[in-house]
Length: 188
Image 1 (cartoon, helix red, strand yellow):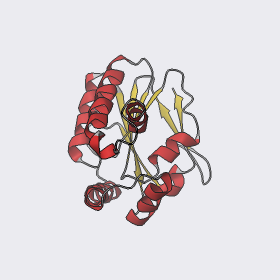
Image 2: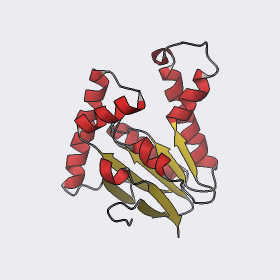
Image 3: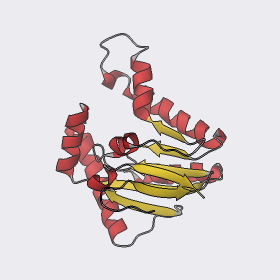
């Protein structure tokens, strides 16, 4: 990984990589991935927002998101599994993954798919993340957000203390400012 102040984060990956971009909701993951295209031939970037938009366009107008959120999550996870197993190039997955179980499941899937595993964690303080949610117009309920903050904060503390989560070949910790400059993947 390289980069200086103002430059995007550059991550050199293999053609069979699985990159999990994680962090609490509103941390800046979507903005980071939208900032610059990931210009690796064959790379696939997965984001649940695309699944949500696809479903929204096919469901009755005005149906509240909360009524089909479970279906979005289910379809997104199916998409992640299928893509990890069949895509030829790197797979970049965007999700909070604040729960340890989710990160372990992503490691297991990537191992099953014979992919090198990279975790990019975008850290933001809760107030910054709330502002990020408001700016995109999607604010989580307080209890859900607080659960993400509690789990994500504990994980960041462990990372800063030198903990290396099992199964990941590389873990990159970025703050919201760094993430705001984008992520560029290159291959070996």
